[in-house]
Image: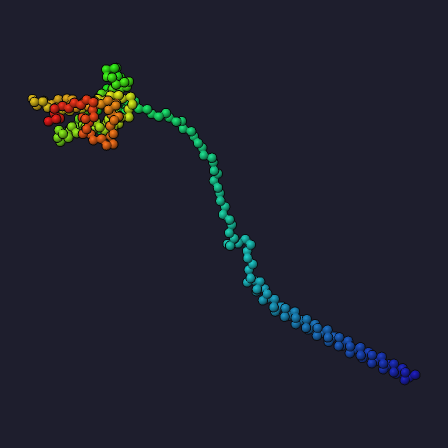
Length: 230
């Protein structure tokens, strides 16, 4: 019986000893795990500043930066108003009277007018209905008598060319006056040339090719003072 009790006691002691050894081994393993975990934490703490430095140096693009953003150009179109059309009342064409036509023609050719007389045909001439014009001009002095005469022919030709368009003019008489010195040495304004031409004769002249020296030949009546002939 005593042997059995002793055996039991020894068995309990052996079991208790084994339990202490197991507890010690568990404590040692837990301490080793704690040490390893502590080393991992320290390692993570050592690498954390580098991550912070990276985050400090890496700048995210500013969403408000518009350097590379190209906005489409805004075109402001001016309002297009419809054109305002104002109708200008049409003026009736200005119709020159025969006197106006003669006066403007004399001014255009640079002649010196003495007088212009317009008469209605009173059956004195068998010419038909229309006007008879008596145009008196002053001759221009020149170097020679022949140049004075030819100057009158040239001037009369230019005047007749304009009057050719006057339908109501049925007969034209161009009279030139010029100072003439008589045998006693007295100078007096006299008629030195007269050119008479009817509407029919005037219409037959082609002034594009006409030579003014032929004025005496195309006139119905022609007079020249002897002062111009000498």
